[in-house]
Structure formats: C-alpha cells, structure tokens
Image: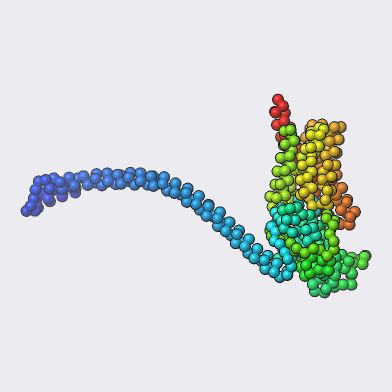
Length: 267
Length: 161
C-alpha cells in the first residue's frame, strides 16, 4: 500500500525533471527495499557468523597460546617468589652468622631420617667443606643439632630431640643450669634441676656453651611444663624446641671443633 | 639376575623417595621401609649367594640413611636377611598371609630390639603415641609387602611361562 501510494504521489506530483527510468527505479526501491534489507541483513549475518567463526578459531588458538603463556608466567612468578623467600632466609642466615662471630658454613637441608627410632636430617656439604662430626648446627631461630657423620658431600645431623643428644643448658631468667636431652617429637627434657630451683613454663632455655658443643647463648626452646613430682629430687621439665625441624630449609654449621672430643657415632 | 635388579631398584628408588622427597611432607609412620622389604624378599625368594648379594645394597642404603651408630644398621639388616632366609627355607608357604606375618614379625622384632637397646642406653624418647605410630608403620609396610609380593610373583610367573 505504501509503495502504491508513493508511486501515485510520484506520478501526479512529479517534478519538472521527471524521467521514467528514475520513476521505475524509485518504485523498485520502495517495493524491493524490504527484500534488499532482509537480504542485506542475512548477508551481513552470515558474513558476521562466518567471520566470527573464523575469528573464534583464531581466538581459540590465541586463547590456548595465552593460557600457556599465563601458566608459564605463573610458574616463573612462583619461582621468583620462591627465590625472594629463599633470598630473605639466606639474608637472615647471613646476618645470624655475623652475630655468631664464629666461622660458619651454610648448608641446605636435603633429607630427613625416616626411621622411627632416630631423629636426624641430612645436609649438603660434608668433609669436603670442612664439616666434622660433633660440630654444632644452628639456624636463626635457634639450635638444630649436632653433626653425627660426614661423607664427602653430605652430612648427617642428629637433632636436639634425638634421645642421643645431650648438652649443657641454662635457664635465661634464673641462670639455673641443667642437662638437656632429646625426647622425641619436638620436645627435650631438662635433667638434674633441683625441686628448689625456680623454673616455670614459658622460661627460655639457652645453651651455656660450657661443654663446647653449642655456641653460648644459642636458643634451645621454651619450657612448656615444669612439674614437681612427689617423689624424687628433681623437677620434670619439658622444653619445646625453638626450631621447627620439619620446615627448616637452610642451616649453619659452626666450623669449630667441639671442646669435648667427639667419637663418631657416640655423641 | 632379573630378580636381583628388581630388588635393587625397589630398595634404591623406595629409600631415595622416602628420604629425599617425601620426608618433608609425610610423617615417618606413613613411609614404608622399602629397603627392609627388599632384604626380606632376598631372603625369602632368592636362594644362595644371589640372595645375599641382593641383600647387600639395601643394607648399605639403610646404613647410610638411618642415623644410628656406625655399622649397626648394616649388620642388623644382614641379620634380617639371614632370619628371612631361614624362614624361607623352613616354614614359608607362598601365600599372602605368610608374607604379611613374616614381614610384620621381622619389622616388630627389629623395632623392639632397637627400642630395648636405646632404653638400656638411658634414652627414653618413646611414648604411647610413638607406639601407635610404629604399629601403623609396621601394618602399612606389611600390607604393601603383600601387594608387592602379589604383583612381582604374578609377573615372575608370566615371565617363566
């Protein structure tokens, strides 16, 4: 109807420069515009779907590449974070080695003794690095243990909590002396402390350095319980170690010979 | 020769995996003693000098990776081998239950011996919790021994056929 109306208007109210070709063309434009438009729409749709599909294929390829790149970046970021953390730990270790004022050598923990009876760790660096049996092993948080055996590039360290470990210690607050002995887990016991002495839970225990097995003042741990048994002469004192042996990654070996001669395997 | 290589690989890979890789993540009572298993299998299944030869490397691995007094665990491991060898000669029947009992028995015997020696020496690091964990270790290692026995025995039979 609109097309017919339009053509009638064109016919009766025609302009001075009227021509039949233009008139027919005008009618054609009006009549076929919807068809043109729909075809154009369809063509545009098909073309956009096709180009979209092609783009999608490209995008999916790009996506895969980007994902791969992102994974690589994540991995390198993780490595960088690890490196930063390791750097922090090593800086702390270096600062600690300076405060020790003794010749030390840093070593990385490479393994743990998995036997049920003994508590030990393996560190890289052995007799080739000047490490000998009996030398003290420490970390910034406190003492770790004592070198037990050495190989050319590996050393075995018995931890403070091993039942074969014993050393002279002192209570920081009251200067009471005792012998610390490993008792498994993350605990040590203090032996030979008289019931009359003042030791309470929370006291910090340091190595006295008198037996030469550990640098003087190195932290052993904190008292968790100090019981007074009805019988006996001594207190039952338990100390939790300052260092978490499962998470320690780098340690320092104090390169000074123990004052008391150390027989390999029987500290 | 093939069983010897299998036992060597089992003891080396198992011990290395436990000590150098898993020991930071898993508690000790969940880490089975592969070298011990290799020594027991050498005694049970490999007769004569071949069995002794197969038991030597895992005994060395145990000596290196257990921080006991020098030489003790090498000799203890050889003791385990000779015990397993005697059991293999006399009363061993090739069934899963026997493997379970033998491995559990030898592990328990070794553990009790070491505990006794340490207690006599004056140390007492053992508690009820430690005992429970040790039972878990013995049970877990023995169960693994049965699965390994079934797998290795099946493979060996197929090779022989």
